[in-house]
Image 1: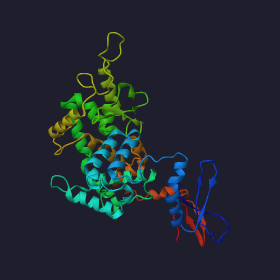
Image 2: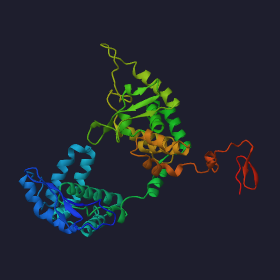
Image 3: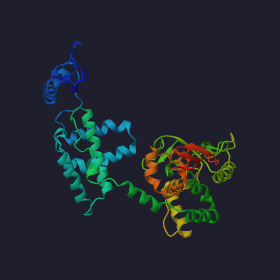
Image 4: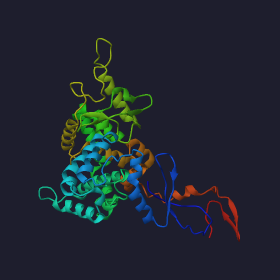
Length: 404
């Protein structure tokens, strides 16, 4: 039940009551009273809305005077089935640590924009253990507050979100330039990557298939650990990324932004073929099925622990003389950066990496796009470059060449 704007009628005609409220009574009759101003229409909703909803047996799930603590508990319980466990834990932790202690006593309906702004500034100033919070940490608090107030609109407690766009005005979110600069620092160049892979192949060959897979496919570590032998399609030269391991909650879940199929390079395909052949030498005597289902199993045949992968990469990077540490996600950034630098379509890179949109791919790796192709505009010409002539005003000109 909310005010609506009338539309239609003759052009230039003046509508005496441009605002109306449409609702149905308990007996099914529809009413549409009109009002001269939005304020009058909203006042009607506030005054008669509860009575009309009560007559139809529509009792609100939350009280109109709910405080932040009361509504926050309802909100967290309501969103639990619809979001990932990691996201829910993220919201719950920030609500419990920041929102509840500082805003918990305030009615949700009475929160103002200056109050929300002052709250976020205070969070940044107070910090943790005497240290100021970084903008990214304050942004996470802001995102929790914004999500809760968006839900309050849906539940009818508010008509607006006073925290909307505060993240931008307070400069909490890192800029595209800052994010791209961070990627440049983490990604390996071709020389360093070659050194890392060669050292692994020669001195730690048991890690070579996984270490090669990460910069050749761009998989997240949880996606790589959850690969099964059957996910590799040797004939098609592809991997089916159907699941991901959530280390924090100890469970398998759907990959971020859904399942996808990634291409496998010829070099990686040859290594995977040999790797899988070695895994299949160990079979059960009963039915001949492989003992392990994982593409990269541990010594015990279970899923490989991500912490062991990180330790191994740090050790290999140190021995290879890279002069810096290397993590699994650095190899993912290496994949995206090198593909973009090679002139590969950002759409293809986005699909390979499983980004939510191509805009994310361009924002992260777009600085590596080759821009030196000054003759790229020649592809727009429709005239054949055959040395012929075309008729122009005042004479003729060679085909394929511009005229003034």
